[in-house]
Image (cartoon, rainbow, N blue to C red; front, side, top):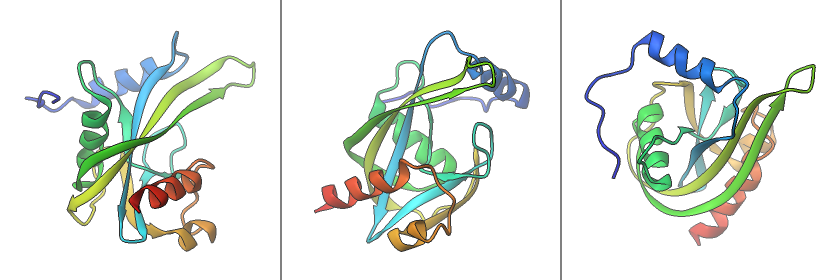
Length: 162
């Protein structure tokens, strides 16, 4: 299990972390929590760059000493207050963004974890500007402007659910 934080990071701490992720010297491991509740999936609107304003799954950078499952469930709780039990990993995806000169500006290795919802309605916090329980039809209708990988991950989670 991951250790609990004893103090909240300051704004300066968070700004320094974000700055260090731009133009990295190696890929950064991040986790996503894909949590279904019936036929709906929990999505959050990103507050920070990259991709501020876009909708995706709750997630963030894996912390040192933390397992992939623990990290995904921690990010889920921090961003939405929702509690889930990790069930399986769904997918691993490279997210690479380059600047106008072709230099790698961001490079994340995203590990998507399927979580089984246990409690919580979802309230935006931490790095989330908003959150919602979205149906597949909502996503197809572009009600929540998302990343191209969201719908395939949603479908994988639905198939894994049974």
